[in-house]
Length: 312
Length: 312
Image (cartoon, rainbow over all chains, first blue to last red; front, top):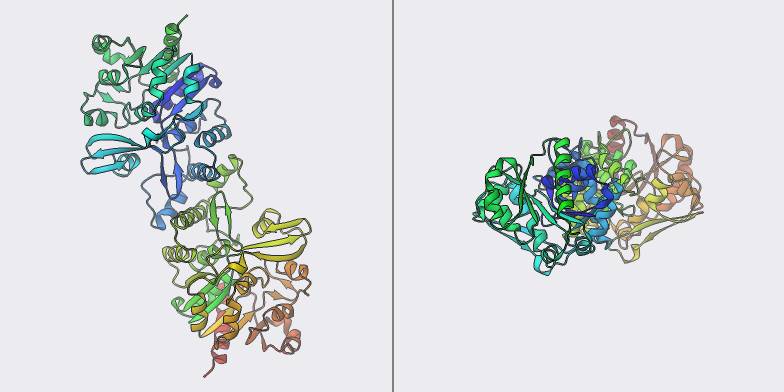
């Protein structure tokens, strides 16, 4: 059993590769819910949806969010009613939020709802929210605090980041099966997601970081920073905003208490000595996953490293 | 000021004519909410929506429900999640229900929500729900009780009707402005809607029937039954199911305590003596509104009768 932690597009790309490399039923994904928010009265879980849609083969590859070939007629009508229309909601995607919100109001947990949704869409990997309690990633910008989606989507990530907090995380508990999955894992992958606002919230849920430190299973992370910049999304802005150098080395530092191996892009081969001096074992790989072949190839490499690190 | 009572398609056709015949700002419509129900966690108000969409010029004329040129992508996705898909929800129409549900959860009343929606869609006539309390029209069929939309849409109105009840109506109060509008009206129209399940629930809200009896303004009704059958919808099944003859005369009997004038189709001219014997003053008109011209013409005729009946 492989356990992966992450959220969003970077994670989904790797996970698509993992599902080609092993039986997807052998994969459990623990997903960030710090981006979740309520809009138009609907509970929206961007990272859970990106992972589920991607593994279902339904994600819109070009846009990087939502469902392929979706239409936007409900959104245009919501705008007509004067509702905020900055968060793109396709009509099919909207159905997911309506369904989820209806089930949550019937007192199902987010874990249960997520499981129903991924099964309905034919996803065989198990997808777990990090917690069933509400946690909100708040970005403290030079213009004041912003919930993550407002910072990213509404404001186009244009404000300088000064700090990040995860509201509610101290009172949160790992969702059912999260700690059990980590304990039972043969190998654990920290996906190439934003270490501050995608993997960060997961590690901040009380008990999860400790479980990753305690497990005998090897833990491997893949750097989302290549050649001093993030391939996708605002990872560079978050690292810089929090006072870190924008480099794979900074990511390795954030994870160093957990890691058995850190994978950086071949472009960053010169960082290996500094990473190994942390000390964190490091290797290079081709980490830019711009086609399915490369996703599968990085997944296979990661899995074979995990196998080689496994205790006898 | 003209006040009209009704719900659904028959009412909307006439009201479209009224809005051409007078300044729409001079019209208040009191609409049945007994058909309202919750589906997918959303509050759906079929009669309010039909009236608003029609007066906004957005109704789908061919289908008779929903918004013209709407798409159904969210619905197909809801079905994919195993949700009930018997109630057709277009993507634009879904936005109305999402918007309304979000506002109701913010503690706005249905009156306030309806007013926001009709203004957003450019409807100048005032549209009032009959009540802000939940009332459910329940059809007792030979297969057991059915909420109205399940009887009509899900089961295709195929079960025999034995009785009808309006759950919650005894505890309900007229929505704000309803009694005031009736009291201030220069004329009142009972639209050619189903007298049992469209106008019936409105008259069953405590205080509304009494206000209609008490007002000095003339009250005119138009028969939805022509030549012994209903032009649209299951009015005939409801009249027959409740033991009434399917005829304009039965409709006149249901309203006789309220009416100053009852308008029947020219086809039913032979019913005039029986209606006048109730005694209810009766006239004939061309009541089949199969084009805009006929809607306007029936509206004008109705308005001029109202004017002629007005006390000096």
